[in-house]
Length: 115
Image 1 (cartoon, rainbow, N blue to C red):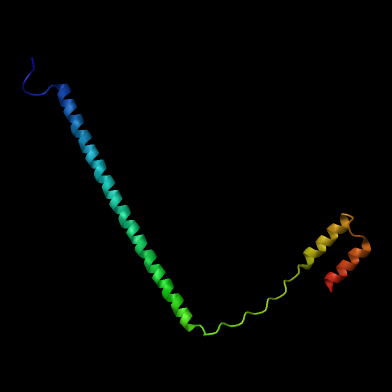
Image 2: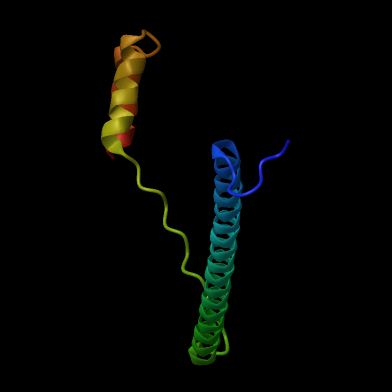
């Protein structure tokens, strides 16, 4: 026979578990929904900021282009690369120490480098 009236301890525990589980699921779903909305809003703001930045850069480039003369100036001739004398002397000394250069060749190369 089934007892009528108040639920027993097991029935009360089961009902509480169902209510708590439902509340937890609803709460988690609402939190996830809020987080998705916040993320979407953040992405929209970032997109708008990037668009504004691109517009500002385009306007700046247009302003610079309007201020530049019609004919571009001729490029300056490239300067000869500077020779690092100390490094070259160290290379010559290493070659001499390795026996690849004798004293006369070393002196000639050094004189040419220093002139």
